[in-house]
Amino acid sequence: WQAVYASANVALTGAAQLRGGDNCVFSLCRPPGHHAAADYIGGYCYLNNAAIAAQNLLDEGARKIAILDIDYHHGNGTQSIFYDRDDVLFVSIHGDPAQEYPYFLGRAEEAGNGAGEGYNANFPLRWQSKAELWLAALEEGLARIAAYAPDYLVVSLGVDTYIDDPISEFRLTTDDYLTVGERIASLGLQTHFILEGGYAVDAIGANVANVLRAASNTT
Image 1 (spheres, rainbow, N blue to C red):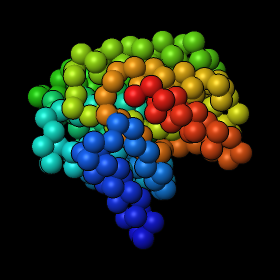
Image 2 (image 1 turned 45 degrees about the vertical axis):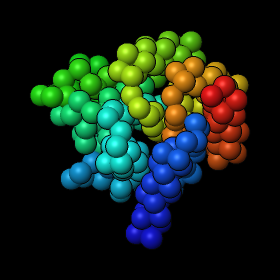
Image 3 (image 1 turned 60 degrees about the vertical axis):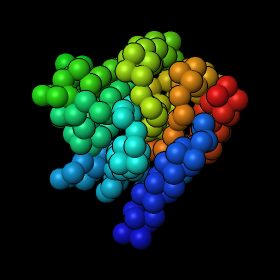
């Protein structure tokens, strides 16, 4: 619990830095959070760091937040938390739930419910998807975010999309993460990156650093 609580507070510190005027903030959270919902946990996640940061920004005066989840696995917990709401747009690019954890959420037709209808966008991709296909989905997701015009962007940053990740099936390379950072930064939004998955231990540092380097150089 000490680690779980500290991880959530790292995310809250990042949110405070955004409110203070920083353009690009990184919260190195461990354990991750995006599989945790209001009433269930899973996937090493106990408190949803990205959701906590987003809600904090709303509580402190933001009108709208976008959450972009680029972890290999669907952010089912984040989707569940905000599925009925229109003050948070949730966009996720992930392994198709027909093949991949968490299996029960993450389909393209899940678009939100009630007030939240139209504010949930899933981009499931099949095993062995390469950078070209993944980046095309990213462009679609970024277009949705741009149209939503949020006050802040929270990114659930998983780098288990990496080609040599031991538990994942996408094919991004370390150089591709530079493009990821550049494209996210092209929105021109104050952005809070929150670490989620990544299990290629020797490469995780370089992959995360490339996203952040590109994002911070262009914001």
